Amino acid sequence: MAELSAKQFLSLVCKSKLLTKEQLAPVVDKLNKNVARNALTAALVGENLINEELLTPWQVKQLQAGKTNGFFLRNHKILDLLGQGGMGAVFLALHRYTKRQEAIKVLTPANAANEGFVERFLVEARATVALNHPNIVKVYDIGEEKGLYYQAMEYLEGCDLQEYARYSKRPIEKIVDYIRQAALGLAHAHQHNLIHRDVKPANLFLDEAGVVKVLDLGLAKCDSVMGVGVEPDDPKTILGTPDYIAPEQTRTSVVDGRADVYSLGCTLYFLLTRKVMFPEGTVIDRIRAHRSEEPKPISELRKDVPASLVAIWQTMTAKDPEDRYQTMNEVAEVLEDWLANHDNEQEGGASSSDGLVTRSGILDINPLSSVELHGLPSTIHFDRSQYDGSSGSLSAQSSAIKKKSRNWLARFWKRKKRVSGAQGQSGSNLRGSTNKVLAGKRRSARVAAWKEWLAGLNLTKKDWIVIGSCAAVLLLVLILLLVFVVM
Image (tube, rainbow, N blue to C red; front, side, top):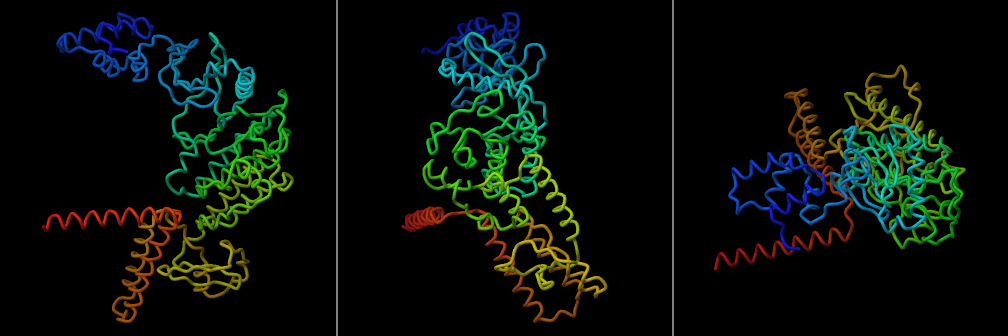
């Protein structure tokens, strides 16, 4: 298509009904005064309309492509394309009367001709529009216009939990709180006889206020809808995502809320480790693994996850539904209790000395040293009353280790400050031998910090090979450059 002239572009704007001639007049007059007639282009007009906030970049792009339809849907003006999926597209729209920005999910024309897709689309909308909970995305309206089926939903700014966990290790407390919020939203759906059946990080949205909302009830099962027949090990008849699907969901269409509990447990595993529970093999291999195999322990992928939280995850992802938490409300309560107890442990752990509690008593750990106890659980409970009345030094040593900083550099500087404080208190009594010991411990601390930082990267053997190869190539290039300069 030939490039549009400014006049042709303005004609398309009027034809689209996005703007009237009266609304365009001030912009056109301004351009005529400041720009030579032969320099006035469609691109320049579009840029000025965007700057004046009369049109959006997406609208201008569509108009420059010669399109004049598709900018309005019932009472909504389409502003932007937010994303596309297998069932349809999601647009950002402005409601004509309320002036509220909404997300409009539109079924593609091809899927609109498929009765099964239309039914699933409408089931999701009807099921969700009846729900009113802060942790579930709100559906305002559903409808059809000129063969286009749509849902008008709450517009959210932020990212889904898949994106949230992609680039770095996230704080455990925040992860637990986000899973707790998701459990509350799903509990509300379950109370309305609605089972999600596709709980996963991509379907949990984190808004800018830190609120998690459950998305995409497109696979939802409710009492008013007959379940789709499932053939075991046939991906074409299994509804759900293989990396997060409950074992019973791959055998039958008759599932209850405990299937969502399992999927939410898989989501917790992913957020903590940034890996799915069974990453290897084909779709069928992963489906079968959920039924009979055990995933790699969380402790091998992330060592700072407390054993008490691992135990909660293990209950959520039990193979037998009878062995799981039976309701989402129970999951939310357990996670809330864990957060409360974890906060109390952190507050009670502040003390003048750091120590590890063992089964036999207290092992004093110098804050500069790096100690790893093999074979011991990360959380050990003991009766503190047996130490009542003992010496002050013993009670001081019994404090829990302070919460680790997420940033390895911050941990190093904290250790350095503690060393400086110890030296100040001791004054001139510290002899040369003691200084040598402290210097050695500082070196150990640096090495330990580097090791912990490298471990947090979760690099595989292939990653190290690629990094080493790149470093070797870079070194070779530098040598060649040096030789060239010398010659």
